[in-house]
Image 1 (cartoon, rainbow, N blue to C red):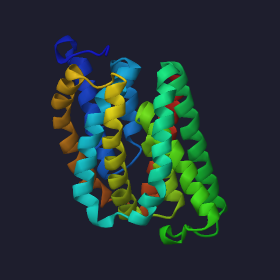
Image 2: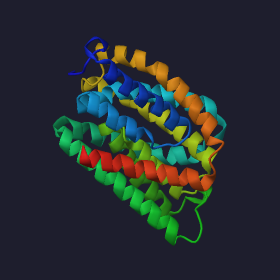
Image 3: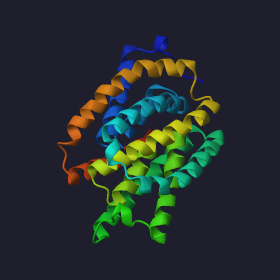
Image 4: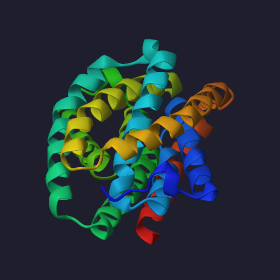
Amino acid sequence: MDTMTLWHMTPLEFAALAFAALLVGFSKTAVSGANTVSLAIFAAVLPARASTGVLLPLLIVGDVLAVVTYRRHAHWPTLWRLFPAVGAGVVLGTVFLLWADDGIVRNSIGVILLFMAAVTVWRRRTSERQEDPDEVTTRAGRVKARSYGILGGFTTMVANAGGPVMSMYLLSAGFRKLGFLGTSAFFFLIVNVSKVPFSAGLGLIDGPSLLLDAALALFVVPGAFLGKWAVHRINQRLFEQLVIAATVVGGVQLLVR
């Protein structure tokens, strides 16, 4: 894999990656979707495809911290509805990575994120009430879960950008703040761990990338604690606005890079 090692990296480049790693921890325990900024930073410092392999283990570290923090708030019926479709999306994303170049990957994910954000804003403005997660068992609810699941699996495989897609789904399903964070924590821990064999098989994870991860993981932990401190000081409406804003920023960044 064509990636820089610690020994070939300038202090400024490492500082940028360290900040991105801190944002990973923050996004996992506070504003999900904020790690799209981390994705952009990693892709700017490292080769775009290689950056996804370096970022994945850091995301898993953040996922573990989020699960420890919010494990009591997970909504498992929602997770079981999503997993089959997500698995299909991961397989599609793996096939896509076999032939797509960096430009196609970035543009595809950017368009998907902006579309999901627009749909979510439209639904929230036109709907008379939010759905209850326990009530999303109708045919329309199942179709929505499968659609978001496939998109989430696809985007998380090709660019580690599944967070915003799943954020849009959880917001549209009416999750409150802690339920949102607890459900997404378990979701991404399971999905990201399942992606490791695929990423390794594609050559995106190797010895040098793991060594770089070992150094950067030290910055994920304080980011997670900062997020845990901040989330209790953010009201529900602001929380939702920040999630949507982070999704839009991430989508635009992917399109203009």
